[in-house]
Image 1: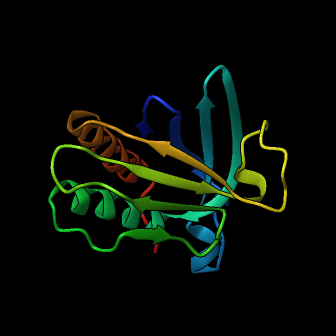
Image 2 (image 1 turned 45 degrees about the vertical axis):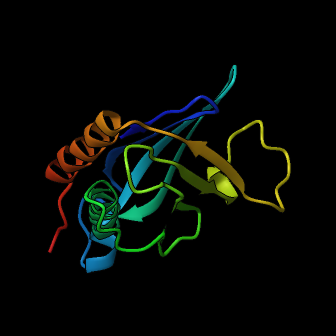
Length: 146
């Protein structure tokens, strides 16, 4: 999933499940995630385990609700507070998101460990649709495991 804007770019890709198999339902559904952030000439790539399969579904559904003008909530957070999304869109054709990254998800150039990093992105409607489609493909590849 990729979101861009004049101030920065954000990319989220699922690489694999954290555990190939586990007796515990929760452990079976943690995902290894690659985050790529770009601001100006600075780019950072982080590989972390902080999202679950059902949280990936939540992100997909939340973004779909934004594009459908039926927003589920103005902010989306996850169990691990490393990443969150805030919708500041006007409800028309202009989409504005602030993506909060903290702890190990912060870009390499962010030098204040005590504060999260906020990245604004402003995808157009086509890009947001493409990001939603990409999330759906990643969910197909890494579904919730029972």
